[in-house]
Length: 394
Image 1: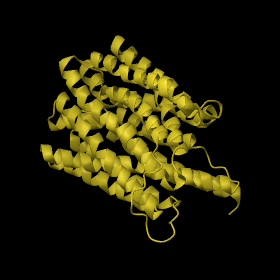
Image 2: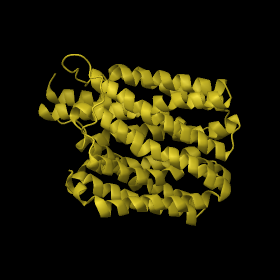
Image 3: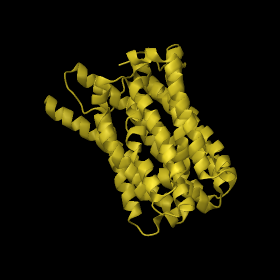
């Protein structure tokens, strides 16, 4: 196979996997709070359960990513995640009891969160191998943008179905299951980029590469992600309950659409600016987005906030993944990204969802958005006081 054909083939295979995987999020992400509400939980308990969802998704994916690194095989873990998603949504709608809900959310969390770090690590290795062989694959941001496209098409399709956001939980779970099966079928085309280490598998967790600079990166990212939890966990309910505007799918699609150009331009931006600089720009956009929801509780304010998703996430995510990849040894790439997703992103959302539910019940949605903007401000201040040396990571 000649190099151009191989480049196109690999790019298409990874692009398809991202497209199909994030298509699952088109239902699972915006409609999970609505599913929990349909089962019979109030806003406070929805916040607690979403927090549990994030908490369970912290340690498990890190362990699974470590095993994938140790075995030098990524695809079995991607396939296994699909089975976890299917099992989780079945339990969620079949057994409507608190313990069963926690168990189901644990399965769903592991299934949805493990592929992010493993798929990213697989792609990063493919890009590195391509560069070593003088072949250039599409950038991470470009292929990740295909994932956003899958998310957009599903959310818009759901929005066009009358009353979809009022559907019973089992209907939403069935739709998610169908998308998960499509993702699992698509994995059959994905190449295995892992390299099995010499000798037996590395079973011991080596954390010697985790230094103070790595932890500072995680802290800066985590503070901004804590701010984001206000709208990632409660925006759907804010639309339906506060604005009485049943446009969950359309608003989610709008955010995904505006992030696509930024994802595709992220590599070019990081050639001019360091990843940490882009993270700070994103943190400022998060503050503006939250204040738009808080100060303008109207349809226009909601649209403005979603448009700001282009910078608050479209630049934030690839910059965060790149920053952590630069601070992680290649042999521990999936583990490093899993720590980012778990500790840097999952833990803040757990804390934000748990605290946010209490804020909503006591003060309301507007105060939730206003108060949570403080954490992104803290991220910017932490970088200004401790992280100037991070500009050198390019």
